Length: 185
Image (cartoon, rainbow, N blue to C red):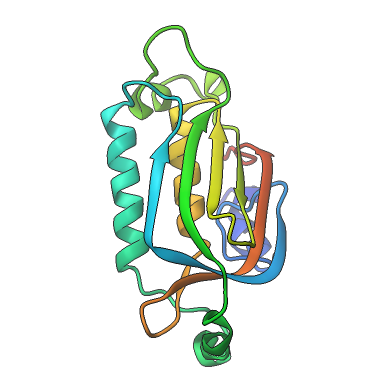
């Protein structure tokens, strides 16, 4: 049986205690503040004319998951101690998605980006989730594939409090200029 370091990735993930984000970002800064999603939370695309249909579908899936997933914290009491603090916690109203540099032609779809050779794909991104009532989180990437990947990361930040409030307990969250780190062959 051939073993390589990829075989042990699940074990390595136990060493990271900040968040249950997979894959683990190369740079991750978190705080200790509670932040809840506004009942009117929305995801907007900024500066991407004629957004590809698969990007719009990915946004729709993220919205659905944020509203329907009832994941609770993996701690004793499932985060019940957070309920009283959530009453006065600030709310996040919006997530904006944008590309780092506008393209001259049409923006490529996620599928077009994903079918490029691995070495020529560009998936780097930055994610900022504030810890205040500023109301806006941002994901900036240089490709639609990067936006798609990091919508999935954004989904992993949120929990349910038993009463339907979706929240994170480690705001602010900052992931700067991240990109895939593991290529297993």
